[in-house]
Image (cartoon, rainbow, N blue to C red; front, top):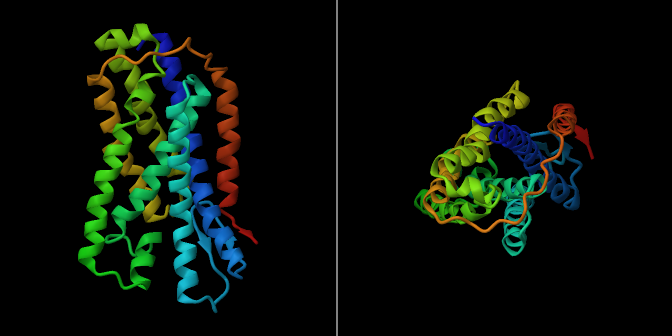
Amino acid sequence: MQPATRRLASTAILLYIAAYLLTIVLHELGHAVMALALGDHPILYNTSVQNTNKQLSNGAHVLIAAAGPLLSLLQGTALLVLLRRGRAVGASALFWLYMSVFGLINFFGYLMIAPLVPGGDTGQIVARLHVPAPAQWAVAVGSLGCLVLLIGSTAPLFLRQLPATTQATPLLRTSGMRALLLWPWLVGSVVLVLLALPAPHPAVVANMFMSPMVLRRAYRRALAGPAVETPATEPLGAPWALAGAVLLLAVGFKLLGRGIAW
């Protein structure tokens, strides 16, 4: 791996971890804010929210469970629209691209695991609404198709993060795309599972390992597609400064595991 590619991979890994952690926290904040609005006094954790009001109606529970995935959908689609309209490159653009991708994976991933993970957000929703199993599986299959198409459409956005000289050479393009997608997933997944210990929520783990299934679509399309016009590459910034910021974020994430009562 060339020094420039190694630097890109290091930066991408850090941004990947930061984006995933923030996506999880924002998702849980969606639950907590909705619960608060419905008269509950929730306890916010890093990967879950505990409701304390035992008098909540069935409809209130459905709204609270739906708030997290819907906020993730808003995160993913809004950022994707903005990224497609812009031409930004560099660390900030890559971070928002990861945030967009993870928002989409989070939302559609929850729809996909609804029939399999009863304790997940969508699993609770379909149970409370008595959604028939065939309908759950139909939505799951449709969600997989939508997710693959959406993530595949991000290939030019990832490719745009590589200099034109890197895109022009198949070997360098492959190395660059591995730096943006493969290495962040391999290293990032290990770090994220460790941060979620001692008891990662099954839905969090499922979405984490679901990521490569759909990210490979963007990876393959980027390798097979034409070169993408890219502006002058923005400096990636000091990796150590970014590492320090991600470390602080990780510490905050772990501390949130103790819970915050609202």
